Image (cartoon, rainbow, N blue to C red):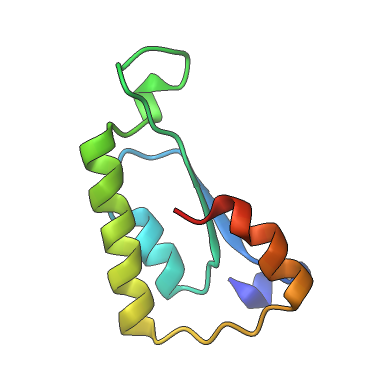
Length: 88
């Protein structure tokens, strides 16, 4: 993914219901993931949203992919400050 983008941080805007796409994206070089979730299956994005239990598994899959990939974070201090708002 990094080779396909001129941006410093690559990511995935995941509109699937798969619990693996985030982890696969991380293995391909994504460093930021956007995923819809819902508490009550309501709203215009509910069909592509995960419930809390699914989101937990989705995040666990990403964490396992990070470990397997042995990602090296070379972010600047400014990038890390901006990313702190999104850490789960």
